Amino acid sequence: MSQKPAGCSPRDRTREEVFRHIRSADRATRARIVELSGLSRSTVNHAVSRLLAEERVTETPAEGGGPGTGSGRPAAILRVVPRDAPVAAIDFGHNHVHVALGDSWGSSIAEERVDLDVDLRATEAIDCAAGLLDGLRVAVGIGDLAAVVAGVPGPLDTDSELVRSPTILSSWVGLDPRKELARRLGVPVHAENDALLGAYGELHLGAGRRYADFLYVKVSHGIGAGLVVEGRPYRGSQGFAGEIGHTPLPGHTEMCRCGNRGCLETVVSVSAIAAQIAHTHPGVETGLRFPLQVNDPVTDRILDDAGRTLGGVLAAFCNLLNPQALIVGGELGASTGALVQGISAAVSRNAQPAIAAGLDILPADLGTRAELLGALRLATTLASP
Image (cartoon, rainbow, N blue to C red):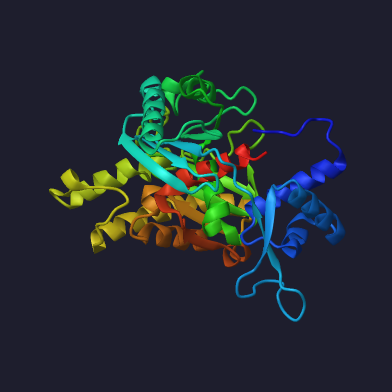
């Protein structure tokens, strides 16, 4: 990540804090920045004046009024001045590689996705991602990139930036995805856990914009979670927060790729759901695609049951964390809606009543693209001066 020099003054640090709030907020006004930052109005005004003089932000009257308009001077919207250089994102799923180029605002310009066993073919997956991005850059006529962010479906050590789990991503152990991709692409790369990027995407672009504290759960070929606390992603002491897919389920003996039996993701995952649908829908398995478009009572029952199983686990996390919202993403979260309904039923039953009553449970607004769009958005932040 880009950082200011260690010796910068308190006034400089305040200016950078205001700049970050302007970038993150939707239709930011000076009054909104005061609210978000807790700084005084005069301090915010001084920081905004500096940013305007440096041509890092613009301020234009709100169209048709808006927050802060009324009998006085209409509120003005603050926007970050985009950099010329575009950014890129890589989403490594357990079974796919999805890449995108984005403009300086983080909006997708071009994308490409291929199916690949990412877990067992790390070097091939990294080569594939770099090749796909290079191909897109040539196709759309883009040269240098300002920043690249990659999402990895496993725990990344925040100190060493290495993949550390020998069971979740066996062929990735000891690899530094950031360094490997930077060597191939010729540009600095930042790597994050994929579920954390999904949470980041929902925080800035999706359902999470309405909440300061929420738990994002990616339900796909694996299960991971991204936690947002007071508007900021929480990684844990080593970067391993959110690894909930290997929570043991009493009474289940299914073998998991981690070597244990009865892990949550052996019961609630794309492969587990696909097997149940194939068993109950002869012939469907040959054309089954996720997110599911099949919408019949049997499929809904399968997803509802899976949601209730997942919700029983999530209820304990909600009791611990007391989030405002539980946002469900991934291929299963973006399917028919029955999974979210099952989660809601189980959380309502198993969480403490006061916690359940104040909790919103909803599907991710960004669907299966939350991780990719979160990576693009984070890349624009890293590329900022």
